[in-house]
Image (cartoon, rainbow, N blue to C red; front, side, top):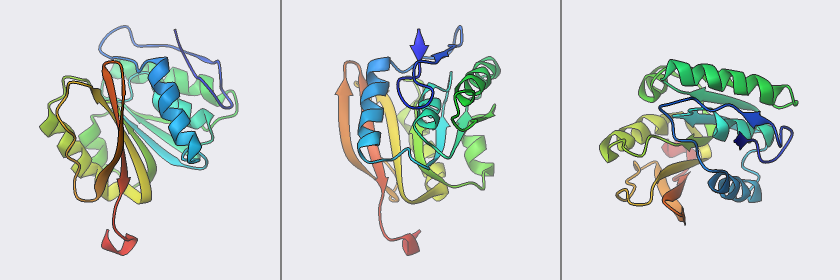
Length: 190
């Protein structure tokens, strides 16, 4: 069972797509959001959840006070599950997440929105080069300052973010590795 851990929708059960996704474990989500809450990163944030699957990461941010949340998931069946989950979380008083049923790169190329917090949880078998391309496309949509959390397999290669981002810290939880990235440089440099 997947559920929202904290905030307005704490305890709300989330549906999970029958196939094609790998939900982030509750232990990893709890660790991630404890770190984000320690810096008040969710409060009033404009959140983007790429490779959203059920939407659990973005919806956890909504439950914890995000101003807006966009869930991007290319699989149509998973996007429908995310939409259902978004409605359940919004019923608790959290922001209603918008679900975009498109590939991450397509969304990033057409979006005119900007984001303070981005959660990136691609399939573990996504090649490093494709993830690097997603981060490059993401960089122009980031506010300054912004935080990007990337979830990868612990055995994956090192993360090589574009010049607009730097790895602030990395944490391991079993087979999962979380990379916390932040924007660098002054806003005028962007």
